[in-house]
Image 1: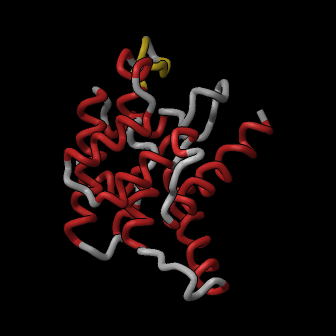
Image 2: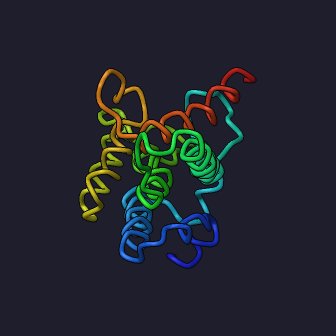
Amino acid sequence: MKANLKKLMPEFDLIQNDELREKTINVWVEAIEKGGWELSDLERIPFTLLIPNCKVNIIDHTRGVTQVAIESAKKLMKFNSGEYDIDADMLISGGLLHDVGKIVEYVDSEGSVKKSPMGKLLRHPFSGAGLAMRHDLPDKVVHIIAVHAKEGDGGYRCPEAVIVHHADFMNFEPIKMGS
């Protein structure tokens, strides 16, 4: 499954630290198994249930957020050099995992994707952070996952979390507005 997951999301290979890359992939594998999905299902799971008939799947959204975060970080470092540091591996892992909790937040219900019983109780930032903690990901990655959505509003976000948060909404808001 891991090799095929890496084919779906080649951004895993952008993580330079081998251990972090492996742990990041393992979180996805556990989420898929825990959610009762097959790898082939990922391309039909919408990245959000807030947009009716959303055509953007969880894989494309995750890749888009990660790529926007990477490119944004490059520009920010170019123009704001010295004001703060950005750990590229933490940023990429956090981008790849920001919505992994949706894999357990959602369930297949007679061919359509709906909230799972757990998803009705816990939104994906919580379940995603929990999955990441189970795999001993660094606190910064868990933080990025936990605060990337509205749950992080009003609190502290490290620079990588700020970037992933805004990359996520840059990939969400225009689609929402067009629906």
